[in-house]
Length: 79
Length: 262
Image 1 (tube, rainbow over the protein chains, first blue to last red):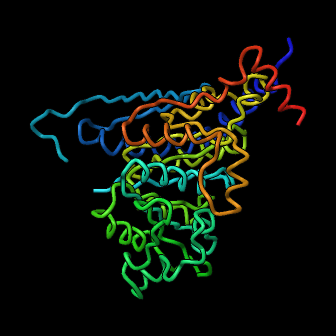
Image 2: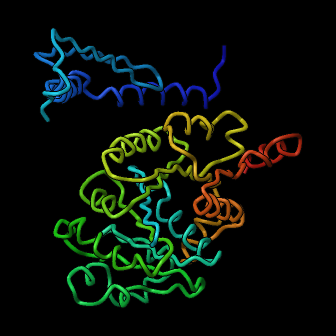
Image 3: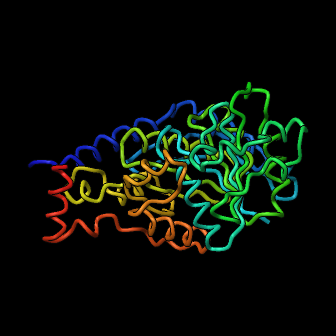
């Protein structure tokens, strides 16, 4: 199959943009974790957070899992 | 209250200043009061594009340093009576000027104009950041080339950390003949890659380069594109100039062939 110049350009651009947007996923996950941890501590005891990043051509998917043994009762929430 | 719009791109030479000037002229023709600020301190070009370089008495640095009022530094365009230009300094250590300084200048014009355009320097350094903080909307200018689109994508990531209400895309220097031939990335593809609403498409126009040497705005091919761009900006519509139209069909194939041979 023969590609046109525009199609070749499009494919190259897609690769370049995906690489650029990747940034530093581990660093981003760490920042996200610490932010979520800070907030979730207001609502639950000893929360654990797992962040996973999945990237496709046109979107970035963040899977955030939050685990805890006990949720604080609404009356004693501290902000 | 004026709409404060910054024209940016990341990459240099994509036509930010040309788009800023022509869109300003078109809006002023439609009856809106427009001020264009050149904040590319030390590398001023707007004055030359607008043909006012011989009429500069004060510039934006004079305003910031209190040597004149903002209205004294504004230059009224001779052809478009609603269009004003605030030129940049031709030599100055730009690092001494802050975004807050420029913001104050912009604020002083806010009640006098309908639109304030901020012509941003290329790159993503201090000059770029200075320009962004003054605006509440941004127009990102790209050409259909990988390097330009890549830089625009990086600029968009940076812009997302600023408090801007809206971001629009303008695709400049579009060659309809190359797009129909499959030799240039299509405008729709660029929109898909960058995920921001399109404000307009400006075709490649030989008149723009020729007229810019004379300090004259406009161009025979692009005139309709400027009007659509102005209407889209004002009305929030997305009517885009079809650059491919005249290169379709039998007659279009002939045009493409001739253009290729010239």
